[in-house]
Length: 491
Image (cartoon, rainbow, N blue to C red; front, side, top):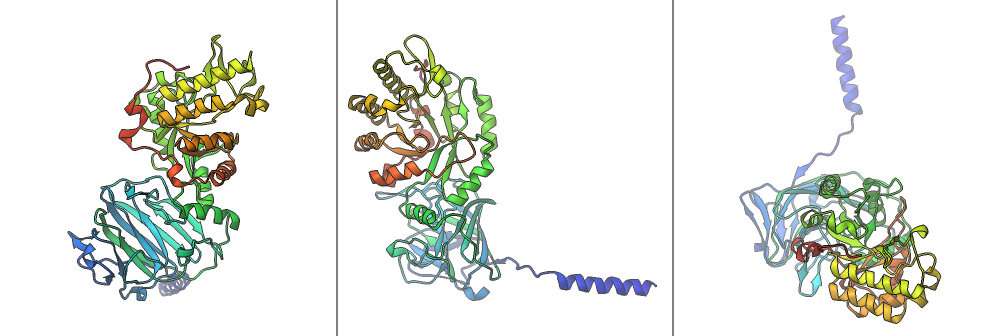
């Protein structure tokens, strides 16, 4: 009987083993001692080994994996690397490429490594770590310099998913005939080498481990968006244009996870902002800190919507400076008769005389923009329903000039709001001529974030480039730390 049981168990173990799929295993491409299996093109001295680390630092060069594993050619695979950057590092891992003697690689995709690098000459580099360079850009720095992090990506047929410390930041599905500029036609999925980039002498990046796992052939993935949308977004990504909606609220059941999923699908980066002010969810430093704890590891910008005029009395500058940027509007203020108005609420809006109301509105906006330490003026030029039909008449050239001047004088960006379709093209043109920077924003009331249609329309009509767009300032340049909070409320 015992022999029978033993035979039965033995046969079952063989059967179960035969049913199991042999999962591919991770293979280390860097041995920690030398560059065996790797070959550099120009300036090979830009890559060296120190203390068991592979370091890229020097004149432009690329280091190709040309070892025996998988014959050095990869199509479907996963890669994970332990990476650390010095300040001003600009590097990347290129895949589906091939050796070439010099210059930027023409074939394949690059996964960007850049946590703080910004400029080379007149070019402002906006694409941060995890970007599928020029295809799906990540504008928020999810990791810091001088800290080890894991950069990983998975390539299957026409799809690439990129992760930073396990958080997905890119999920790109390539259409059959993708938009590519004339000189970038070879930036498509295929098969080829893996290469590390050394960008320049000021850039320094460290690799502790580079592992790869080949994956089997698979079916192509269907697009989750239209071909027209993919072309539109990809074109802007190649232009280095910051496709960011800085004005998103968690309303109507929208969660941060859903916003992040929408970002991966559409290619739009998001800035999510709580409402901060009197009788709002965030009312003091303690509730602000509690909110920040909920968004620490999310791949989003952290905005603050400063509500009402009382907000300047509720928070410390140090607490406010934890946000990436601050925005407010001219929709809440107290008129000359002491009536506190919220212009989007008909029963809280008082227009006794249209012209006097408009003059007071413009004066209030001037006070807010000039005195409050904000980065962006949002919901711009909004008028209450009772006079909205006369928008073009009431926003006279003189009032527009005052509005544009105060923005330009104080370096405050102007939102192009897709929900309200404001400001008009006329006002935006004057703002551009005055050197005002712009942002895109939705100000959603529910879970549907839309697709920034009006913002994109105005981008094309005005010929906006990345140089016309606002990006959050460095910590020591934030207005709340430079100019502080006003001693009293502004309106």
